Amino acid sequence: MPDPVPAYPPVHMPDVPHRRLLEGQTAIVTGASSGIGRAVAISLGGAGANVCVNYVSGPDAAQAVVAEIQGLGGKAFAQAADVSKEADVIAMFDAVRREYGTVDILINNAGLQQDSKIEDMTLAQWQKVIDVNLTGQFLCAREAVREFKKRGVRPEISCAAGKIICMSSVHEVIPWGGHVNYAASKGGVMLMMKSIAQEVAPWRIRVNSICPGAIRTPINTAAWDTPEHYAALMKLIPYKRIGEAPEIGRVAVWLASDDSDYIHGVSLFVDGGMTLYPGFETGG
Ligand code: NAD
Image 1 (cartoon, rainbow, N blue to C red):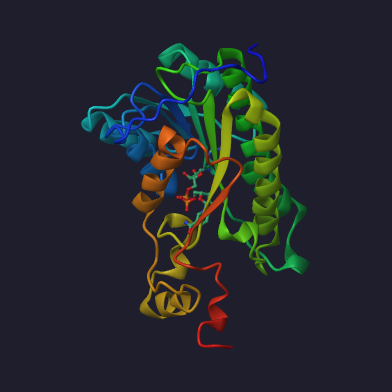
Image 2: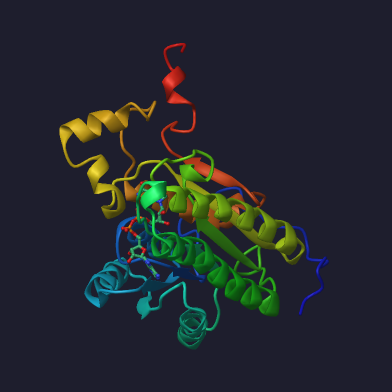
């Protein structure tokens, strides 16, 4: 295992960023057969990374993402794993090592909602959301840290030994009635991410979160599927438009690349200003 405070040579930063920012790196994207995960997997593949397209059900959709990445000239394969199951996660990392040798980037994206008023929320609804959204991110991050520490930095590949990006949410800071399980899971992700970041920084392992606002995906169809719903949503977004999944893909490429090498332990909000207390936009 490398020394925790290694004497690496100074970081080499070219003046102009390389177009394929992730060339030669391998990424795992969890929950990558739809929505944000799909867009992130395709963006990473387009930036030169080999991609493990993780899915829990529906192999055809995952295979379609693999085909899109291959169409961009990238390498990818689909791997089934339930991120809330320890054995599945370990098997997924083993499969990626067999396919590409190591892992450089983990995108902890898989997540779900099971909404209910607090008085009606079942223990099963609470537990399912915590298991996938929080425990799933812990299990994947733990395997990633094990891999990154064992391997250390390869300066010709990246300044960092590895990068973990947690897909959190504006609801890591905005309370959300009717969704207490979801908001609790994302609040948990925030301090999990920052605590891991603090612990592993000396090994040059970078850990950050992307916190999307409202992004047009299957998870929130009810928020944008009619003009009335869309208009109501706009009251929450100072920038007055919904976000699109490829926008998160572009942020993920940059956050996983050496262009953001000094960004560590940060929750990066990509939300059109949703966290700016929009109710006060006309002075309150
Ligand atoms: P989505 O439903 O399209 O994607 C979630 C993916 O996770 C799906 O492909 C699903 O199959 C997968 N998944 C669910 N349980 C899993 C498990 N146990 N193991 C592996 N995969 C599993 O929705 P999305 O909007 O793309 O959500 C992606 C992430 O972004 C989630 O973590 C979500 O909380 C977060 N997010 C989304 C928004 C938004 O507006 N869309 C906003 C903030 C945060």
